[in-house]
Image (cartoon, rainbow, N blue to C red; front, side):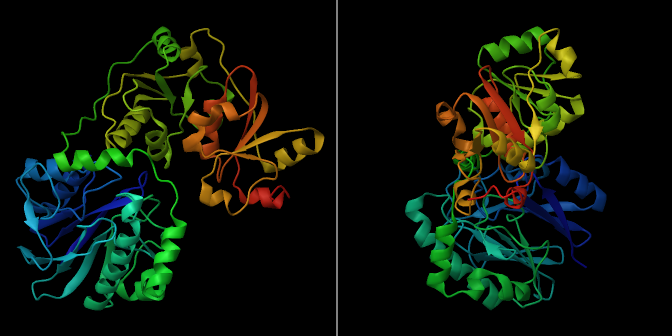
Length: 449
C-alpha cells in the first residue's frame, strides 16, 4: 500500500511530500532543511530512490540537490531546464519505476515553461495521486508572471490547458498534492481547502469552471506584487545550492548590538509584536517570529547587509535561522538572546502604543490623525480607511519621506505587516501607534471609504 506523508512549510505556504510503498520512497519538491525528510525516512525505515522536482522554484531554495547527492538517489528535473549539475532528465510521458510504485511524468507548463507534474501509480498502473507543484492547486492555480510580465499571458493560456489536461487524463478520485497554495505568493489567488481530488477540482478550480479567455483575464487582473527575493531563488536552484548549515553564530553583547544599529546594520527583534511595541532597542526592527516572518523579512531585507537576530531564547533564534536558510539567507552576523532590558544595558528603550480600529475611530473624533495603510494594492482596491495614506509595506523603505512627522497610526489586514511598518517608522519626531487589529473591524467602526 502506498503511503504519502506531507511536510508542511507554513512560513512559505508550501508543502513537500514523501511517498513510500514500505520499502522505498520518493520525495517531491523538498525544502532546503532536509533533516525533516531524513527523519521521515528513518521513521518509515525506507530507502530514498528518487527526488522529483516539479519545477525550478522561485520562492525557496531547494533541498533536492543536496538530498539526492547525500543519499545517492536519482534527481529528476525537467530535461528542458538549464541547470549546472547532473540530473535525471525527464520529459512528458516518461515513467519511473521504484519498488511497487510507478511515477508518470506529465508536462504541465504555466507556472513555468518546463513545469512537470508527477502521477503516482500503483504496480497495476492505476493513478493514486498527482503531485502538481504550481499547476493545479486547491481551488486555484499557480501564478504565471514569475518569469516576467512579458511571459504572463502566454503562460496563463498554457496553465489553463495544463489543468484541463490533468482533469481529462486522470480519474476523478485521484488525490491532488500541490506544492504551492497554502499562503504562498506563488498561488494566483488564495487556495481553498486542505485536500482535494481531480473530481473536486472540476467543481471549484477556475481553470475548469471558466472559459479560457475569462480565466486568462481574471487571473492576470488579480496578480499583484510578490516578494522581491523571488528573483534570487531560481539562479541558485539552477546552480545547485550549497548544503544547509543551521548552526548559530556566537552571541554578541549589548555594546556590540548598539554599534551595529548605529552602523546601519540590520538588527531584527523576533519577539511578539506587542512586546516589541512595549520596549525595544532604538533602531532595531520588529519582525515577529510567526507564520509570515520569512516572507516579509526576505521581501524587505537589503541583501548583503549584516543581519543580527534578537530573541527571547536561542531556540527562538534557531527557528528563525531555519526559516531564513530556506530563502538563502545563510549567514547571520550574530545573535543575542534574553531579556530586552538586559540587552539594552542601561540604554533607554523605545516604545509606542498599541490600539485597534475602535481606538482609531475615537482618536479621529477628537483630533486630526494621520493614518498609514501598509497593505498591498489589491487589498487597497477593495477599500481603505477614509483619508489614509497608502504605502504598501514592501515600498515603505523607499517612500518613508512621504510619511509625515508627528502622530501616525499604522494598519494592515491583521496587524502583522503594520507592526513591521511601525518599527521602520519609529524614530524621534514621530509618534507611531500600531493598530493590532483585523481590517474587518475598520468597517465595523465606520472608518472605511
